[in-house]
Length: 169
Image (cartoon, rainbow, N blue to C red; front, side, top):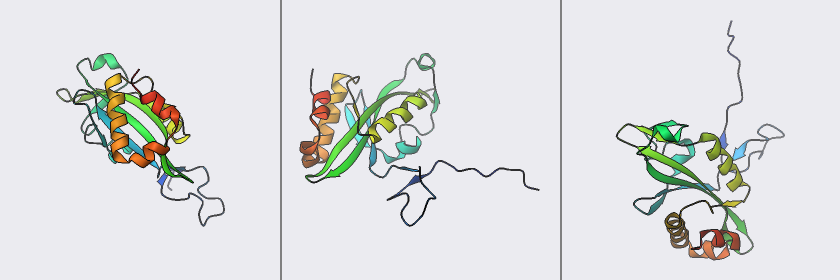
């Protein structure tokens, strides 16, 4: 007799979650319009790393993440910025963005990040919130330049709130 209970696993899907179904799949999360951008704070570089959706970006691979920052005192700083894109009558634009900090010490194969914070901020970006004001000035400038260079029209169509939070203060 099989005593293992079947359960609904967390599912990332493409397109419309209920397309063709009458009820199955309601409540599933559609992450199709979310992109993780990783910013290397020291190198002042940004790149889209889709693997970060599952903590499998090149920066995260082979690293055991700990919830206590003090256990990784020599960690190299990074930001993961969840960026949501939406379509309007003017075209696509950056609709939501939220930044989470992370540190990585390759020499000890350990890192720091708060998984609950990452999940909550991903959710906030999906709900079209802009949460970037806590980033350092240099990283904000890198993110702004990256978003502008990636697609200037999307940047132009984006909210004043995004531009304000990324502007030099």
